[in-house]
Image (cartoon, rainbow, N blue to C red):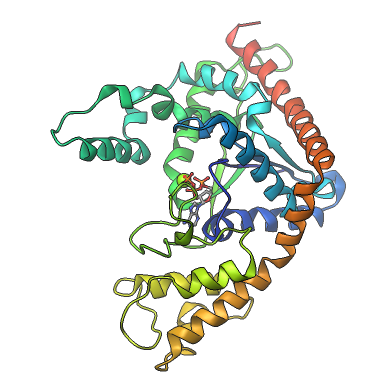
Length: 361
Ligand code: ATP
Ligand code: MG
């Protein structure tokens, strides 16, 4: 039986890039699991990973709102479906995540963390911000260096077999796989019958890379669409109203060539619109076929109008459900409690094994 785990940071309302690149795949996995017979059903864990959000400065009041809103988003997407064995929970309400991260820290080579592209790009940003080529050490916190270890703990804690994520996460998941093996070798534990060494606590998780391409910013096609990016006009939030969606797509940066063509290298703005279009339209045929339908002189304008309609229609059910959940205080709180309890049960079982293998009990 598969155990699926994936997480999302409460660093802002998710956008269509998060949806097409990750959340839509989670929804598909939930639908598939709901159709499985109960006795062989997968276990699915979807987590709002609040501890990861702390690797950048956070305003406490804002964080509290964003982690609740993210939870409501995941509920509204239908991810907490008991009929699918799917659990949605807050990572920061299950203390075993931080506990396992510590155990994994003790077997993690620091140079592996310093090679992470996320860390290196942070270093580069800080270097650029300072005119002289010197790094201000106080801007580099241990949490930022170590957060891939926490991410490995998130995944390994549930003896996860499959992790659906976007391409930007593959380096982190490679670390998670390696840490599982390093830890299993270092602490094999005892066999169940007591005769000889065990095989270690962790399952080595497989990465399910999303097939959907990375969606770029609507304002700056050279940047990826990002929750934490400052400009609301650079992204379409899943919670945007129909008129906001229309306005943002209308003002999306394209180029001065008339007509639509699929040319991601030279026309990245148009390419982004086509990718979103392909992601939200069920019609067969990919980006090239869609481009061909808008090749006339007025094509870009028509593409934008149709795309806004498609996105807004696709998200309508979600929007209504989100609005409903947000106003039902009691429901949200009850779901948060239920999710944390179910996740914690599984997490505690794994930690009992970890402590026994290591000798800390
Ligand atoms: P942040 O700016 O806070 O890092 P983010 O938009 O990058 O936010 P994450 O919480 O880091 O979102 O990632 C959640 C999931 O969304 C991951 O699986 C990631 O691969 C995917 N994802 C993020 N941005 C995009 C994008 N522009 N296109 C496709 N998938 C994306
Ligand atoms: Mg990100």
